Amino acid sequence: MKKPGKKRRSARVAAYQEAAYVCDSCGEEIVVPVDVSAGKHQAYVEDCPVCCHPMTLRVEIGDDGEADVRGEHE
Image (cartoon, rainbow, N blue to C red; front, side, top):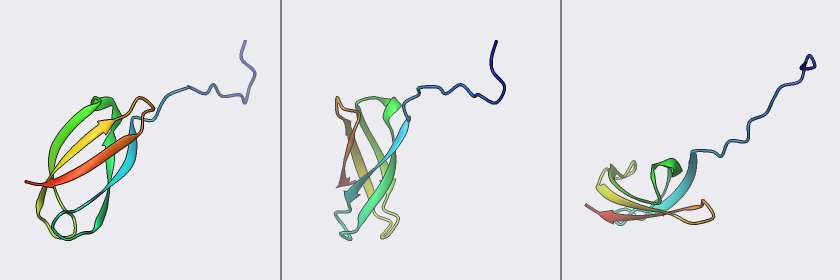
């Protein structure tokens, strides 16, 4: 029987984390959310929120779960 007032905590790993890259066009550091559940190697296109140039973001998830993001001109 459960005791009143006690909540069970789940041991879930966060599916999202933040990582940063530097825009090749404007030189600004951009922080983006990374979906670590989408795989260890990801690539997608996103416009820089500062200068609006399209960037190909390449995401590598390390064995430790940390994300490394690199941006390249589209």
